[in-house]
Image (cartoon, rainbow, N blue to C red; front, top):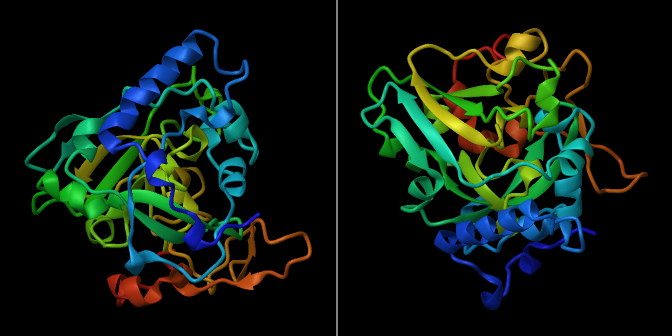
Length: 314
């Protein structure tokens, strides 16, 4: 069942301030270690409500996918390559405690706890389209804050032309990493102007709750004008670089996955047409819909690529 935008906000009594929900996760982790999880406690018990203000600038007049759609149909190869694998195989993943290493061309490198990262930022809800390179899509109500606001705190210098992000490497908790599907850990990157764009979001939740493990807990990117594989999950490193970073899918299959990965219906993937997409949850007999340039965000981001050959730099 799909939800409307008006039905998304939790009740005031359901809201846990961000600075308190981490302690709640510690309790749940302890319960899991004691064997409580899986013996009657609901699967989504790790979720805690978040206090976030909806940002009307970043909303859509489209049906929003259900929580079930969003959390049960995922590409997160660290937990397996089937769409259901992340939900089924992420129960042992521990998103707390968490820290992020910041390095490279900046004035304030270091190791920052998740609490350090979140503390200065007000959380907001943004409703974005998500377009997978496999020609399916969703509409998701994310909770997070502007990526650029975080990056500016580290004071990137004049050599910082790109930003690279790295996913945690924990094969004991992420069974997909035990197989050489990709060269682990997963790495993605953006140009610095892309990363600083107001649309780029650092997400910590969805549907008003903390991120489920299968959706990239506790911290992930959301870059809505790019194919979904650019929105790296479970981030443990942010590195400012002068040169374009090597990224996981581009290393694995450079003719299929470019560095930019902007949604472009005029440039097909070798295995999938990008002219149309299948909206998850729309029903078995629903028609495909036309894919929009930059996933419908062309008015906001097309100027970033002025003069760039989008067929060559796909």
